[in-house]
Image (cartoon, rainbow, N blue to C red):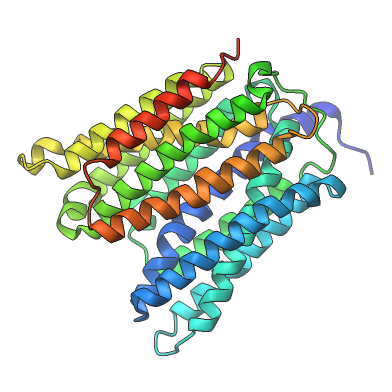
Length: 379
């Protein structure tokens, strides 16, 4: 049997990179952040179970993210990411089975599913950073943007967004399976062939980026959780086929723009624009004006989410290794701080106050401005 030619291998790398990013975001958005909690509420569990499940998921996600750094010293990133996706798929299948039987308690199993989901996403996201460097090539960030936009678009298709928790679980398991296959397309260590953004290689740059992503994820999680908890506002701004399609298209377009900008070293622009769009969308959600006049809020908000989500997924992969500060180390530190802790703190803020307090937006803006001031230019 003939070995595939280098040209054939290269042709499969870009689609594999896109599929890898899309699988991570689909599983995170459709299952870990939405479908899983929706299913737990549907089978009758109280807030105590939800808080326990979220805590276990976050702790296992952080532990797996940090542990992945040590695993990747000895193991290849492709198989490591595939193991993470396998855990995600197994958790989603188990959850779908439980949600089909609402009469069963299943609280103990839900905790184990949360642990598998957190650990799986932790392994997959950190291993994806060096893996994407091998797969992505010089247009890595644009491919990350394509994967991010595709995931958000799929999750906002009306039939998917409004599906039952069981259906969301099956779809998430399928996405994780696709991610595992994409990860196994590359079984070599990264040789860092993509464009080098040298200025992002320092510890200072990593810390500045982490601070900016923390501010954005925290504010986004708080604002979106508050919207989801306000049923009347959610039905106005985030429901109905035309609205969902507009949101999905806005997500996809902004993600591609962000990828194009990040490939050219312009990291500050998508982060600053993301904050402005998130803030504008949040103002629209909470305005007392006629709701019909504020229907622009959701697409603007969605665009802001995709701008920073693309940059978040691309930053660690694009930053070249310097000593111990490898792409995996950057990914583990940024995702642990901004991804897991930032989102948990944001959701907790909305749960505690029932809305986003007035001081949250200025605080997030201050943190982001500090990050942008400290972040060096790539070129």
